[in-house]
Length: 453
Image (cartoon, rainbow, N blue to C red):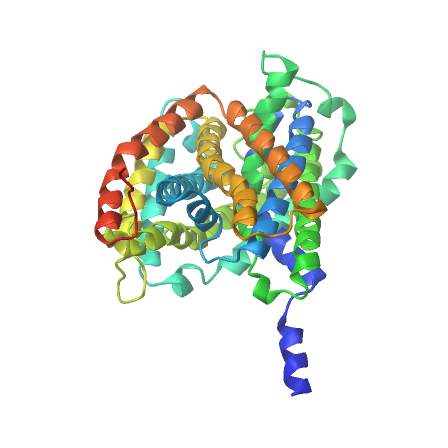
């Protein structure tokens, strides 16, 4: 018996193991064009990083605590539905799903940006828009085809491609400091033409892109030793590791590449390596690794993005066909529908300036993710009260974190820009009449109680 117990304990994660899981969940290939977007703002963008790290830390700790007091399959969408009801659950699911597939559009754009390092025609002012769009769409449908064979086939090389990405990020973030020039970094403080405060808000919204998926870092408490202490510690440590890597690599690139070159770069990590070693070959190797990282990560995220609508379909919030599976247990109708939407976004945002297109897309993704984040963080005090838990110092501390998280989310919403706010508001408004259809189904199934006096 004792050996069985010790074996079970051995399988559970401690602080170190969970910290590494959290950091790896955070550090994705989505940051490969961020140095260009933040560099175009100027050196003042460092304050955007600082605000985002503090805000995301508060978010992560709130999500961690919610998972401890209300462990639930479905994560932040489930927290929202349990706290506020099916309509908010529907809103959260739609926004979360939209954020996920728009995020994959950003990965495609980033990958094409690094392809442009080898094929400059992809960023040509006259024909680059057409060619880059065609390449992105072709690669997208290749992944749709691969995904039809199941997650094992689609994601078979993901570990290798993730290592490629980390090698570039860590390599530049560590060794780039030997080539860092303070005068290059401080060449331009604020190049936005707006106030410093506006520039910082814009930088904070862009920086949040690097941390989207923070909620996935909070794993099931059943897999963790002493979760009450381990989960918050590992969350903080993991986020700090990811933050240091992001800030170090982004800052050092701005101190290696001249401002005017950086703000027009479609492959900032590759350009930084080229400047570091004064070698086209070195830049080409970095670009090749970045391409593998960007396109390789899409395979896993592409199937994962179908999970939210699949769960929603099974609970009656989405049409049933979102949950229909092929022989390889893949919701192909859902994936094809999503791929068509992704093509629409690629066409609508197409630009010869791939970094500019990337910025538009990630701000759309950030805006859509902030709605379910806001619902999920405000769910904590409601769930705490509903479960009749003790409102001691621990409750007050987490209520403070909820308030900080709300302020940060509002801050990031403002920084996402007028276009993102317009389209995001339109999406939220559109969901009100659309909810009529799942609501009728829920009422017929007696899963939604409408009280009429």
